[in-house]
Image 1 (cartoon, rainbow, N blue to C red):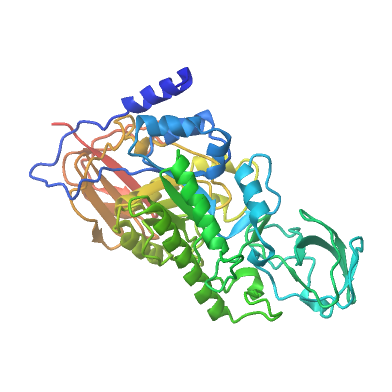
Image 2 (cartoon, rainbow, N blue to C red):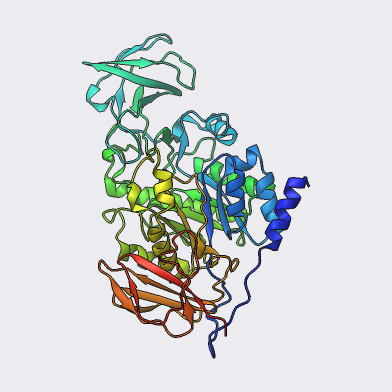
Length: 500
């Protein structure tokens, strides 16, 4: 082990839970200790700053590419704290159309994808044979193609359109009458195609990616579906380490909204029924999870991200609730819907569900210059998210949104302003409710959150103090709580129990 790794391992080993007073006559609710913290980093490299934060959290979701490029930081964390869940992040239903040099796994994966595995629009057929050098192709239904992709929150207006014909990918650059002008042989070889060959546009969910077909009706190639190929890769990653679990992004139960509804799973040239598509897609995701569970065995964690949806598959150990309890627009995920979902999922199995909040100040979309700092310093949103997560038994992470899982931040409330990991200790009961106020008591502290739209007061029992914080010292001023707390709308306090 290098000197750098030894130092990291020693620093990790030195992190310990605090010794603090317990409420008189209180009985712990379970053996879990709080706060339970996660890191969610979709980056190919783990920086020094990120490693320092990740070393103090309990569950890591990290791009599988990171270990392919440099596994040393993750090895150091696992060596110092073997109980940490280190989950390999994999996309279940898409891939970068041009994987970079920092994505060797995706490059190898792309080369294995057969033409039948791509998810396509209905498309049309070519009316004349195409030579390997032709840049115009004549199609029977030119209305089936648009240069501009369907409107979406997940890519910019200039997201290009790519076509698939046989095993060849082409970029669509112009359309006039029945003629499509294309750039040939994108990430493939330009070859001749006969008249009557089917041509269709790739379906795009996230910027710069193409979608793969994981529906239950997806075709098998040489007796194997893409789901089985992906499950084998995931199992191989866990076997090699440093991973001890898998994270699947994304797990939709409904895809009827995707791509303006233009999806053709059976490739008959007609857009499929939206309800049937969603049913087949959800069933296929369940088959992927079941196959992966069979490969990994019962003890290896599998977590998935359903975005604003649910992911109803029994073999999952948890879900990541992206943008809950704050960040996701209410039209996508109402707070109450997310609260019910989080409560249910955080009690399941090994209780690996993650509340992933982010600042509403930056909006829902790509991250503009300077917005990282706006998001990081939205302490009110951070503590609102943390306190809600503490009402259940899941993990918590706060970053800068759907497009911003490239940061790892640390806050006073995470370690009680210097009290140590898991400083709250075990819960002394379930969440208590009084209108919009929720609270939960712990061995060494008390979390209170106002989920309402107006300020509210809360009379804390005696023996608690505010944290003496440095990030938001007006809120965390270190004073003993002797009068009812006024809690602003969508705000919270995490208090420490006073030593006797």
